[in-house]
Image 1 (cartoon, helix red, strand yellow):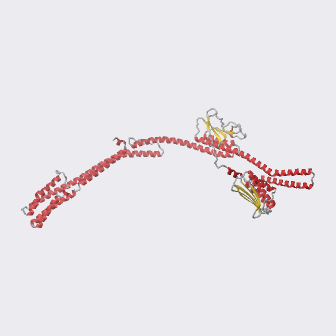
Image 2 (cartoon, rainbow, N blue to C red):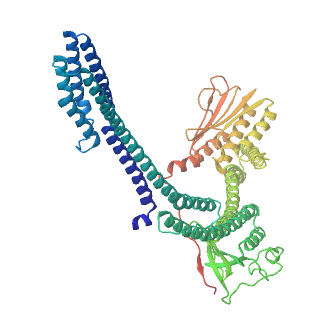
Image 3 (cartoon, one colour):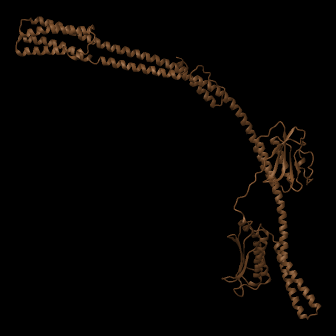
Length: 637
């Protein structure tokens, strides 16, 4: 009973078992009653046939009385034997109750005794002609019919009683089943359907984010336990959802703030990377905007001096005065705050010290001050790290640009010095030697004819030096319409096309930034010297300059359709060819001059650029990476 009270499943199972048991009992009782009524119809038929058989015996006796013939006597005997067989037939006897005191059994025994002891012998004597009154025998047989009718009636009543019993049992089991079903339906309605409805409503309300609904289920069964558990879960979910909503709201606000900060960093990157050498004017507005969004500040930026190993203050937001090492007193980026604040040193604020570094190179530090009662979140720290990375990149690029400008200036000066040394300085040295030679000849008072040859060499040297000076001036005064060697060669071909009065084609196929400035100057000078020789000696109507990079080597070819060389060998080593060959040796390349098969000459220079040699010498291992250390938190002072 306690189990049925505590378990709804047990009650439903008990109801199903009760309904199943009653159905099974009803089926068994029906089968038993039906099995007991199996021979009733046959017994009634046999009993009814006894009545017909009696009438046949009476009719046969009447015919035998009128016509006492053997055939009629045999007919009476046959009918009498048939009556006896039917009276003792198993179909009739097996349908009778086994109890001897049963009225049906008593009526059958009386009918059987009356036939066997009284009527059957009289019928036999009557057909044997022993003086039996046939009329009296017929009346007796008519009385037997009445007993047979009573037996038939009792058989019918017995069969109907069985049917009534079956009907009563069916009605009883149906009523019991209806009662059990009603009880089960009532239990299911109040203890299953209603609680399930409340649980569904609870689930629907929870799906609508309404966690205030409660089922209030009472009892000790499964659904009551489930309802109380769901009520507790709804209460916990309500509290958790409220906490999550608050957390999501905070995260959303923090994310929006981070997005605004990232937008400020993105917009400030243009000013940082495009602000030239003025870091204060480009970084100060961005830092003040970040302070406003993150509710921190002030922020101070110091750059590391590698020579003195100290931190030099460069920029400070909310500063009432200009930094000590300010380089531009016309800049007021640090002094634009309406309410300048001093950096806190009294313990009411905390400082986050972040390194401004690129790789393992420390470029400076960034001091971020914030209230002591406010903790910096992880996202804020990540944004500040991104800020330091951006400042580090800007400072690093600024220093690299300054260094590159210095290196570029030194390279240009070195190239100019080398060009003057390789061309004009050598010519002047040659002229100086000729002047010394002339002085010695004059001191020795040599003949004028001997001195004339020296004067001719001096005139030739001066012409050559003047020509080289003009070539250098022309080279260094080229107005490049675009960066690199391609623009210079295009201007050169256009210049010599006007001087030659014919077309000078240019074929240029070189990757950008392949040659360094020294290599570009040497290639340009070789091309100009070759075109100058074409202008002086070739009498050409067409010329072409081809510069192509193939298989890690640069190929420079200058060709024309002029008169060509006197023979297929190399020409005499004139001064211009000597300079071109020296330039090829300086580049570590190969230089050749020969006739073209189609006519004219071909000047060819082949060398490996310095970039290609560096790539070939680079080790196969990948570049090493150095992690940038994160800032640590220090207390002020």
